[in-house]
Image 1: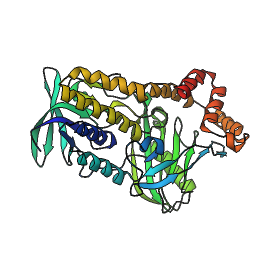
Image 2: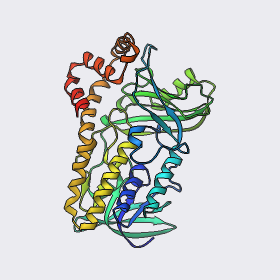
Image 3: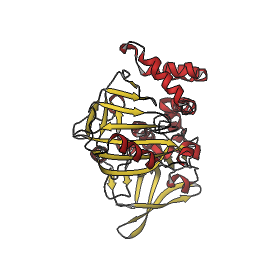
Image 4: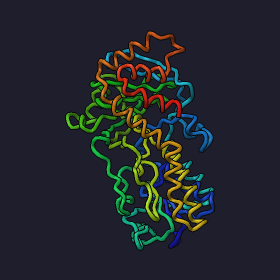
Length: 388
């Protein structure tokens, strides 16, 4: 590593390496610092994405796609199954290979990627972030930069050290747990979603196939619900009831920020992307594609800032984020606050009404329509969502 770079990216996940890729494409000298020994390890994700979101960044490839998804099955509290037409193609990824590929692409564009590099502080000069302190190979180094991009996950320490409040309120932090399990017999082209108090109060449970009779099985519950029973307990009960002969290969638990995007994602010398900027979809909790979109915008703007030596362009990042996904995520957040209060009787009623429709009319839009009927306050936000 050199002592000085144009841009230092802290975090080697999809948001960070995408930011590095586009910053390097813009001519900047970029360094990515990842604290773990390998890019993509450990996996803390359901690993599902849609083709429309993925394709602008890289061509889908079987080496990082575990399963192609053509169907959803939504299971109501009473067991009724709704199979809406999703109108597209999705994938369950092998995140270890996928993240590695994103890092390789960033490196091909000229970014330097370093693992086992633990950032433990930022350097500030006259109120501006001018570098990071990193522990690497037993030494503590100061690396200087014109810009730091924090892609270091939920409640970003880089953001907090720099002066941005990145904490997530308990109301917006969901408690999540997931296993990757073998000996799972499910349709390999179908993602399953379970709703209701039994499975995941204030959230949902998922089963995402990964080929060879394996699947990611996880859930997220509202944080206040997890005080009564931990997410892992909900998941263990589901596994015992539905997949008693499964072999659990991995198990993890943690928090998922289902909040609005940070009001402040930048300060002089700093940009936050991905989970660090709360760019996760507030309804689904998915953050891969939205993080990559944020990363692309941040990396492109960062290269421009370096090229022009004009820190005032930071505002362009926040504006372009709002124009692409930020405003939509704000509406998702308002919808989430209503949907997550649905009672089991509401969910059962919606499933019943959808099941009465011809199969061709059973779409995700129709589900939203039934939700609006149950809670008319959703009307304005849903209309804006579909017509924006």
